[in-house]
Image (cartoon, rainbow, N blue to C red; front, top):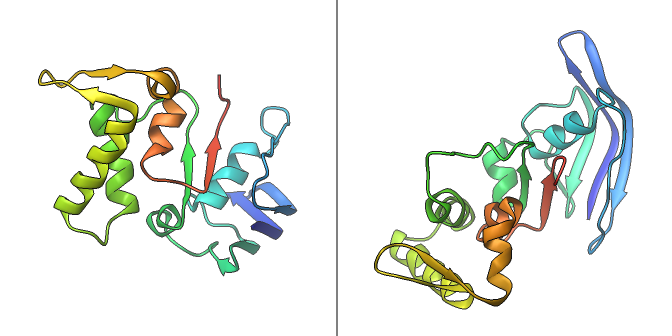
Amino acid sequence: MLELKGVNAFYGNIQALKNVSLTIPHGSMVTIIGANGAGKTTLLKSISGLIQSKSGSITYEGTEISSLPPVKIVSLGISQVPEGRQLFTHLTVLDNNLHLGAYLYYSNRTRAEIEKRLELHIARYGYVLETGSVVIEGPAADLLVDDKVRHAYLGETMITHAEEPG
């Protein structure tokens, strides 16, 4: 469960979040709707640790996360996909999404263990050819079509924030 209690966040002297409280139970899908400048992105950044809330608490599975660095929050299973799909555009799909997600999630394992697990995930959804191409079959089409699915896939995130999904 993700729970926010009385969260306040600022950009300089400008308050972007004022006393936000929210409880999201397991298995829920939640949509945050509001006008530009209403604080939607700030809320996601606060949960992800990309900005520190000034006061209040953010807990995930009973663990206070509002003071944790983003890398620790990702390791708990929370990720964010920013608007505009501007994620390491110079990397391939395999490197950008699958390798990065796996290394963050399995940071306590050896490279060989990570690569073995990665191969198992890829084998279920496509075949890696000698050319490095991936032939997509079945549900793997989501990996090709949806950047958000690819980004979060191997990190096995429990919560994924997608900003303005298209």
